[in-house]
Image 1 (cartoon, helix red, strand yellow):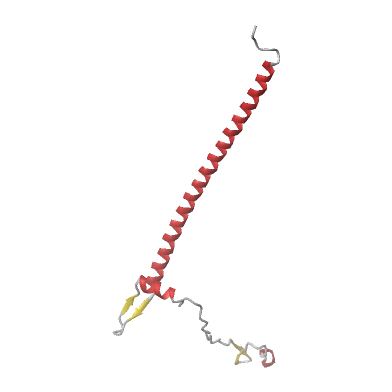
Image 2 (cartoon, helix red, strand yellow; image 1 turned 90 degrees about the horizontal axis):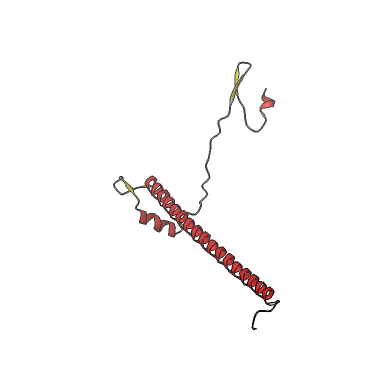
Length: 130
């Protein structure tokens, strides 16, 4: 009779085990790929939202800065710059730092010594005057 031999069962089980292992690997890889794609989409969406917020805040800062900047015309009346003027000014590179020294007049402290008012200099020579 034509029937399966005693070794056929073991060969069937081994091939089935291999096939099931292969299928489970494919499913795991598929799930990992889907998860990575989902995370990447989520990351891109968050980045897009952050960029929009940043642009909105920058626009607000520019608008606030523009509101503070006032220019006088030939009649002496105050005129606010337009946003285009400000953008043109920024493109010209006028935002470079320019050093302007500030002169501060230091007040010398005065002290009364033996009925006399003495100014204390900042060079340390006040000790000699006492």
